[in-house]
Image (cartoon, rainbow, N blue to C red; front, side, top):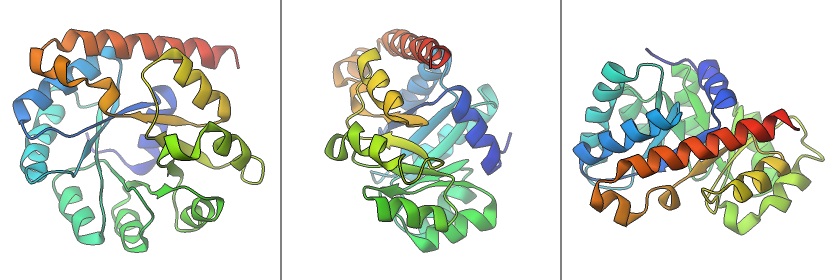
Length: 223
């Protein structure tokens, strides 16, 4: 299924943990996606960080459409409109940036694709919303800290925030960030240890994600 922008936001509201991952081997990455899906993930960000990004993304798009049509596949690390157009043409359901670019905002709006630009100051967050961002990515989270998000919610209480960078795959980290007011978190390398990938022990990833999502549901029910 093709996801319109509002459907992405609804998906994140129900399962607000987004794996952030790049690997040059499509066969391995499909196993990662399978493990994430079985753990409860419904939005997966593949990053444009290597020469094989497009090649692998094509395989992932077909794999997810065939096996997990209710999972949204996004593309991250997008720098300009041309890259956004290329990956949207390949079937990206949402676009994530490490910063905010007007030309990428315009492309996503034209295609009704969810756009999540990166920001790390109040001004950058606000300007991103003016360009149409309904979710702004705070990046890098380990630099700005959860205190920034909490302070941001003072003048901008209605801004939806996803934090990436520095989020650990632990209940304590989820409690810290969601307690500060984020709407979603992106978790990268710490969710996918090199040793786990090389050993092929993908069930560990499924278990870890399932534990995190169960904890989030408990946390959400008590706040």
